[in-house]
Length: 156
Image (tube, rainbow, N blue to C red):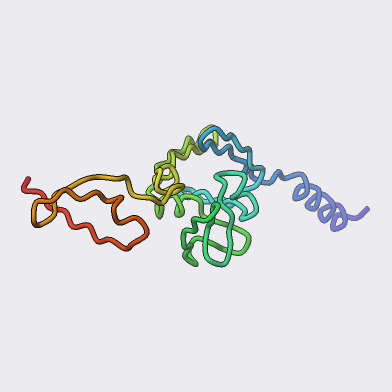
């Protein structure tokens, strides 16, 4: 074996034994603990594969946005890159808190306010009573099935 062949062979061996950086993370959301083997390397954001989104938080990417049941949240182009989805940008959009332990590669996401509210499932405003302009007590439930504009004001 000549020197050139040896150097080419040893160089290829050195390249092939070089380990790829570990991009695996653990994501905590609600009662879910999801181990993701592959994420996109980014020092400040968590980019996951679009296919993993439903496993992480129950949302599914559709043309109208990230959807869970009947609720869809629009997704900007900046939140996606090819097969990748920026989970932290989505968290910012829906006012979801999160934290990251870079050493142990764990990301913990809090509850999404729009998902946890009763209005997301019922879509019915709670009943209340208030006097109208003439002093007659009126209940919101009196207008069930009709469009209602409620204007409130407080002096404090």
